[in-house]
Length: 458
Image (cartoon, rainbow, N blue to C red; front, side, top):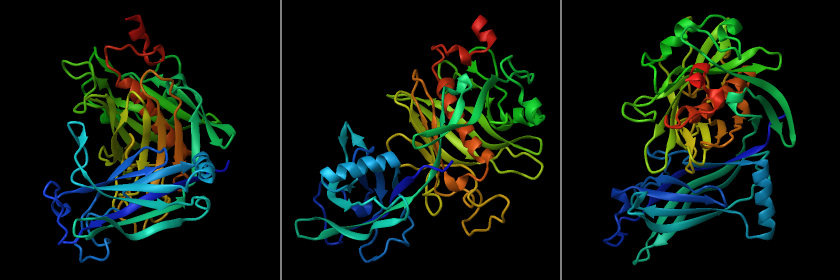
């Protein structure tokens, strides 16, 4: 089945120049000694914000400045989004990207924004042909604002759109209910995977609802337990969850296994950042499971609870297993509203970030190799994993607590070279979704599918 068309709109190379003679009023902190930031708005998409480095006025190009980010924010537009925007632009004013630039630090003090508006920029957009070819809408300096003497500041930015086709997968049920996974293309959907949720006990046994991984892909118990922690104890803990992804022939092609229990911190009923639970994302190889990634999750404290997470890719060593990985995503999802888990290395491949989606710019994370592991890997892109994982990799939509969650997974086409590549991202999405339940307050009871027989009898 063909991938779904997507367009990625990126905003980057942000910089600000203010003439030395131009001194703001005494109540305003001069940008040369204080950070600047901007807020970026596209129609009804969530507002994004980004830091804007200040550079000396004599510099004509921001490219050599160490703080300049090639991509500071991005918007991901599906075919439905593009159709909606095109329909609105016919009857309303032309579609524009709106950017407000502020001096001072971002954030609020006593509920009031601490930054001071310096100026606004509007960039007209025409996304009609962006599905098939890259389009640059602006690249250069724009004059913004004037002080009492008439001197103007200059704001540099690059705005472009480029095709970003993706494979889209959707669970037809909650991961703990062992659902099918469908591939989506427009109004067409077809089954591609089945999931099997089960419990893994210390002895390696499973409950009667599923086969063991050992019988499916060979013995891997000895090293699997080494990634976990020795803090298992009775009481406030959730442990042993596992979900295996099978192709339509019934062969296991990926798995997610909880290797560190989700345990309540002493004196509380929540999983803390200092003591997170963790999952291994596994792929089959050489007759056994091999770790591909590790996901840690915990419950954030604060006014609104959030699911904190950290995802790291694990290098494959010849014959041996290494517990060390490279963190490529670390962020928070709202446990009330849900959100998107995102792997996007755009900023890291020449500047960048990793993270999730909670209404701010997407910095993110992982999927399958863009340069095949069967190749030399020498593409001039730098060290592993950035030689293999570039740009947008994947995202998974996750519902909040108490809601029926059927994750939708988007995977960038260049990162899918085989069935196992896609399945690994599906398993990762399932692990993130199950972590929402694993991080529920221990004063709240889980649904029966997530409780072992001992827990139900207790």
